[in-house]
Image (cartoon, rainbow, N blue to C red; front, side, top):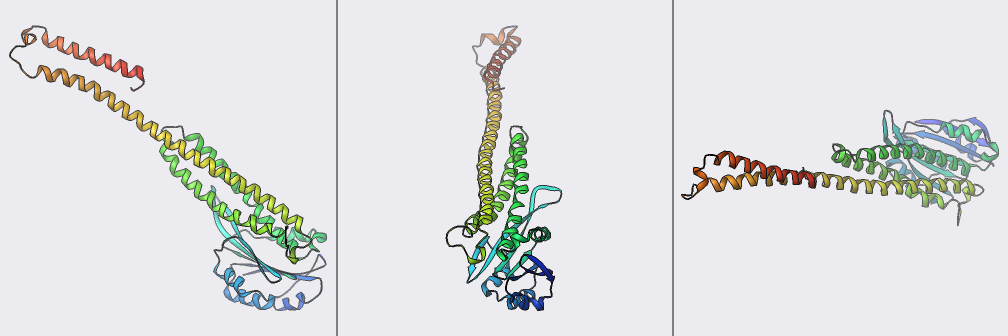
Length: 324
């Protein structure tokens, strides 16, 4: 679906144009066209390929989707894939995964957004409010799109950190000790999803500000360096969360083991107490011929008193040792 198709010249908007006129505008010196698509059909991608002269491999990747985040060069053009992670309403810490594919050439920018409800109209407004920067052309637009995507990762990081803190607080409660393991593994999966969205971009965007910078990005290197700084910061936060989750899982498993040991000690203690009762009763139940206590008038109550006394003493010792 076509969102908008706009022509710009010398940092200013010229007009909203039909797709059929794209080739006419990109032929003008100092003019570039910015097109935005959402959930593009194969027919729309084929039309854009014809208008902009896109590389067939890049178009194929955009058509199939579910690509790894990357920055690829095709001659004088760039093909960029970024993952869009959008928080689910009413479910803090959970998010939907979308994708945006950006084709960038000397005189055009084509963004194809898939499986995402959040658009980039704010990015377009920001660029149009800064004509001095928009004069850099398609390179600055690429930076603005990248910056918007990366900035959306920060609220997700914050939500995941809050969830991790909540789970850490409940680890030391007896009931939640086992339940927390499932929550921690679920959180780890979402952190890894964010890691897979961020980590490949660090290397990809790094090529746009250092070393052999593509001609499209000349004049905008410092802006791409800012994006890399944000990505490195997010990547560091993710690594810190992964380490914390790993530690929390180990602590949680230790708490479960301690709880199991406590139960085992209680069972062993009561088994020891009942073993004493069994021993006394077993001896007196053998009915030997020469057992003077059998004919003693107070033998039965004395036996009960002895059993109770010994069991009470053993119970006291177990309590003192912390087993009961």
